[in-house]
Length: 188
Image (spheres, rainbow, N blue to C red):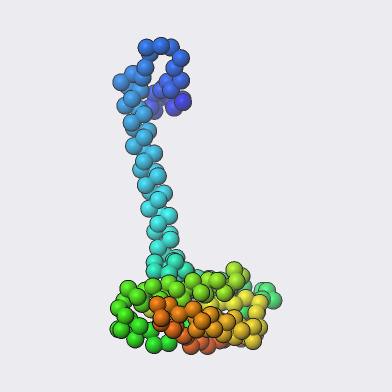
């Protein structure tokens, strides 16, 4: 490996001569390079972790409110330029406070993870969903009719009724908003 002599010097890492190992200077240089590489790798890992934390909900692993708002803002900006049809579904788990109060917050957390899993299996990849807060979720449906969205959400509700979590039947309420590109709609 050759590194500019003026900056660091030369390190011989390919030695075919017997009894001619690395010099003290070579070892110091390799330790310097090793330390620099460790810093670069640590910074990369920290940056990657911070990026994940900024965009994903820690508990459920799906998009968080911040990331969803960015996605929705981009969609609203481009809706006038495209022929895309967008609908927004707001979801609230029914009586979630009772689950936390009766079974404890750990079970409540696992119930949210179970609910997210059911959503993940039933909402296709072209659509985006996120946890807004607590037991509130949102789904942005692209190129989908309101009736089809109702069918998807009712299908999720049906699966939840047939697959209770720890003998707890999870249900939810929802509302659907069709985003009309002819109106100047904001995220609010």
